[in-house]
Length: 162
Image 1 (cartoon, rainbow, N blue to C red):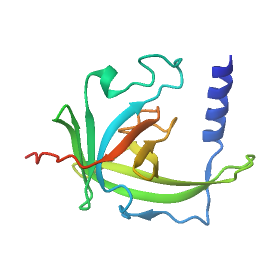
Image 2: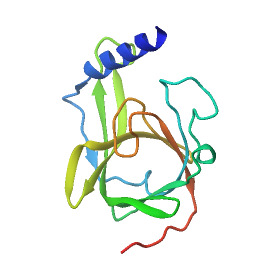
Image 3: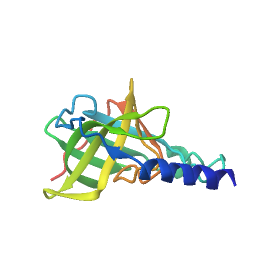
Image 4: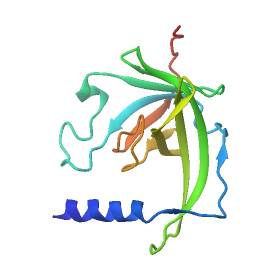
């Protein structure tokens, strides 16, 4: 029952969001996201905590890495095999959420492009704390897939794919 209430509240909060008309959205400031990131875990809030939740590289038996480059290209690998690549734009802005104690939500986002085309579902909203990148829960995206995914900044060397 608690899960249903949480899901309903989350849907109501997201549905009641409206864009703040005084807010500005800044694109292409990639300073915080640029780098190499190693997948640490994916937490599924709809399942109980157990050996497989949160899902980790050890349990999943694979490593996943993503590189966001200064030239606004990105590369995603799984066990050192290319699974996605393209270009991206960074966004930063605010939303006003009426009826909540915290009325202004400040966000950072990544918009992904494949062959110059942006799909409405290929966006991730994220937060960076020191060397940790977390894609937000409940916001469907290319790498986020609706559950919070945590990445750690890494010094791995990524391969160049042709």
